[in-house]
Amino acid sequence: MKADLYLHDGLVVTEDGAFHGGVTVKDGKIAQILHGDLAVEAEETIELGGKALLPGLVDDHAHFNEPGRTEWEGFLTGSMSAAAGGVTTPLEMPLNATPPTIDRAQLLRKHELASTQCVVDYAFWGGLVHDNLKEIDALHAEGVIGFKSFMSDAGTDFPRVDDDLLYAGLRKVKQLGNIIGLHAENDSIVSYAARQLREAGRVDRDAWLESRPPEGELEAIRRALYWAAAADARLHIVHISIADGVRAIAEARRSGTRATAETCPHYLCLDRDAFVRLGPVAKCAPPIRPRAEVEQLWKCLLDGMVDTVASDHSPCPVADKERGNDNIWEAWGGVTGIQTMLPAILTEGVHKRGLTLPHLVRLMSANPARIFGVYPKKGALLPGSDADMVIVDLDEEWTLSADQMFSKHKHCPYVGMHFKGQVERTIVRGTTVYQDGEILVKPGFGKLVRRLAA
Ligand SMILES: [Zn+2]
Figure 1: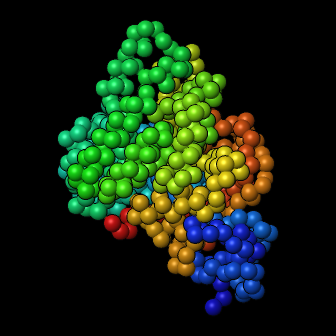
Figure 2: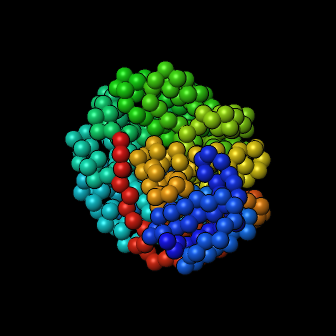
Figure 3: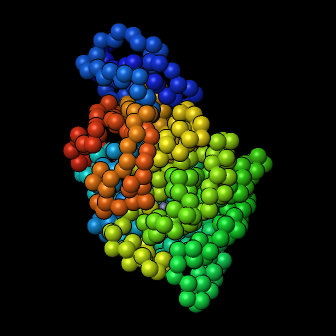
């Protein structure tokens, strides 16, 4: 059999190890994984010259804001940013679009819009809000990979769930073999603290941190774990910012609770001092924590207690950030970061803290693909998997400038930051979608991926 494509002489990285070798591709799927540098007959050959070849990233937390807020990002620029960041399958969130994806009609509308625009493959989350439990079956039937829910206020069009609906939702996804992805912060603690600080006239950046204390996050995580255990349901806690939150999940898992932990590059690569300096562009919830907390979170990650690192890419127009320059409450909360997630973790994790490449692949490809039911089609370098790969120059040192960004709005906390490790080329189903600063496929190349299995 003649291969369509042969990538050879690379550092092939899977979740189990890294070795000198190559990969052959036939009909958009991985055909063989080869050790050493063998001669293989192929239509096209890519000489990797020792560069790293990883499975494409599965980013389990991305907001592309379409429909309704397409001027914030949209499927085209969102998926282009993904491609440039080595993300071959973003799992796109049901909110920060208008209307949010909380029923079948809205999901089908997203399927239609994304199908003509995305340059990488993609899957969708559905939403669980306080009054749409009856929609869950239909969303599941259309292949959503999970249901996003909030314990704290997320704005008027995505009402948070109280314990009653959280518990009911968990029992529902248990029946279906699906999962809830939960924003865990204690709503009354957060709202009370914010009210007190605002009444005291505080508008500074530290006030944002003080309004969302670690104990508010930890209590919500523990309460959610209790309900997940009671329902024997799968629960994924999104964007955890504190080590104690990760530890609480690891402990619950030891006693059988089916919970997983996600954190994001901004909780690992920024800290309170950076947030105070950068301001609104780094505003998010939970907030960026002080350095000591960041290092504890790294320790948990390196100890294997974190399941996924996701971008929580959540862009907005520059003006929605800038209006908070002198009053942090006024800024939109969300960090643009899907394009930089891999370079950021290579720099701060692999180069600075000894994170191994197979561990990185578990965190950013294999685990998210498994948790959200798209493995091994996605997230793996295995014969039969989709040939989604990223070629990485581990040693390239570079500084991000705004004009390198594919996002609609060229601002993020990482502009001006120095990285070691760069995405050179991104391949989806055997086709190069991104190489050296350019998108090489037409909008609509990307295909919808549905949850494959429980
Ligand atoms: Zn989010």
